[in-house]
Image (cartoon, rainbow, N blue to C red; front, top):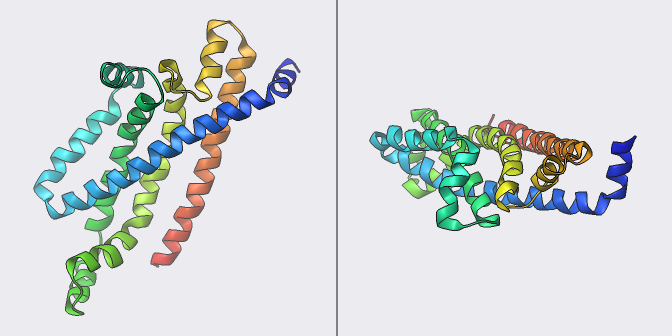
Length: 209
């Protein structure tokens, strides 16, 4: 009952922090999917570089979140920007890897048919390769975004904002209601994003059949 009363009495604050949290995640995600697409496409043309590039992305992804934030602080300082950059780095591997895999798995006969029709390489890329790879890319993006929602809560520790503030304030003040409320709304955002991106993934998959 105390938890319900806490949420009801602080609806505006919780809404503001939820919007801030969602903005942090979406901004990082949109930037990461652009970078990941560009890098993923690039390494399909230079296969020898793929292991190196994907290896770097893998290393970035396995760095603990507090360590990542610690590495970035001397360069970008405390605040929102550092949080966004950290989330971008965590999102890069799934998007880059899935872009590379999605394009590489396109049957060579499809590409040859497009060339036989006189399509240029840029036309093949934008009209054939990327559209056919999008469902695979979206699967990686979906996984990354759900993971990043949780990491974004930790980014509040360095002043990035969001629902993590509620959790950390609750820990520092020994107020369980703040901690539980923050955890509940972080989970709700993660579930909502997973459902929305899952629906988009299904639509893209249906279009490529």
